[in-house]
Amino acid sequence: MTRNQLIEQIKRKKSFLCVGLDPDLKKLPKHLLKEPDAIFEFNKRLIDATAPYAVAYKPNIAFYEALGPRGWNSLQRTLAYIPKDCFTIADAKRGDIGNTSSLYAQAFFDKNSSGMSFDSITVAPYMGRDSVMPFLEFKDKWVILLALTSNEGSADFQTHLLNPQLSRNDDDELGLANSQIVVENQNEYVFERVLRVSQEWGGADRLMYVVGATKAPMLKQVRKIAPDHFLLIPGVGAQGGSMEEVCKYGMNKDCGLLVNAARSIIYASSGTDFEQKAAEEAQRMQQEMEAQLKAFGII
Ligand SMILES: O=c1ccn([C@@H]2O[C@H](COP(=O)(O)O)[C@@H](O)[C@H]2O)c(=O)[nH]1
Image (cartoon, rainbow, N blue to C red):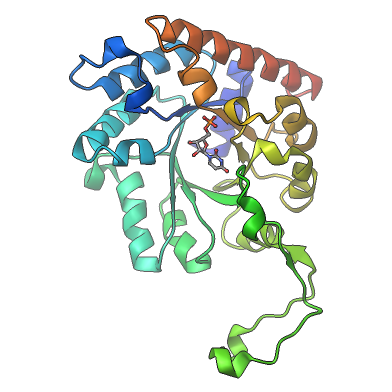
């Protein structure tokens, strides 16, 4: 899906909701467990219930991988069932040396090879440019780079300051050749460096960033560095992030946001009415989004 098609969908559905399809067998409604493929049945009913309100679906790959071959089978069937006008995200958080990344890209983008062709994949930036480029080599596919994640541990690296004023004198001891030491005239946080440097790898038509809703005030700074890129925002709903704050600091002229919610929608009820309750929560979020899109003059 192209950037323009995504923006059109957002305007048409008056929504930038991404439903997280994170099915946990322990939490599935009991009456579905008798189905031969309970995970697919759960997802299928959730997709039917939420499709009027959602522009994207994000299966987190961990929930399928954990089940081995039957999990992969449920994932393939789920992807095939998602309506074609919805943007699909493989939340796989991959990234490795170049030849390995190429195969990860093949696994999630090349239908002839793996049976699956997602629109996008989440990628961890830690291994740098050559770990990300193989994903961008797939025409029309998107990379969603982790920038500022929603979890507490994001403070361990992402909000550390890279301070060029401090230099070290143990480069030889560490085996770092001069060419590997980069001292730039930038005093920035690690997540800011990810946002700035990665824009040399891909434009706003193929690259998005993950920024957690739990870090909403920092979206202001994210937008200074990446004004045009779409942002995938997990962390509303079960993690407590605020939709209003996300929009206040993160929305741009094209909306520029995909707000993800998984547990608050898919487990809104664990009974036989789970589809109904999921639809109600998705609609509630869509209505909040519609009001924000109107307030920002986008629709
Ligand atoms: O920073 C991040 C990156 C990814 N996630 C993923 O998003 C969903 C959130 O699910 P909820 O149930 O709505 O909390 C889940 O798949 C996470 O792995 C994230 O939460 N934060």
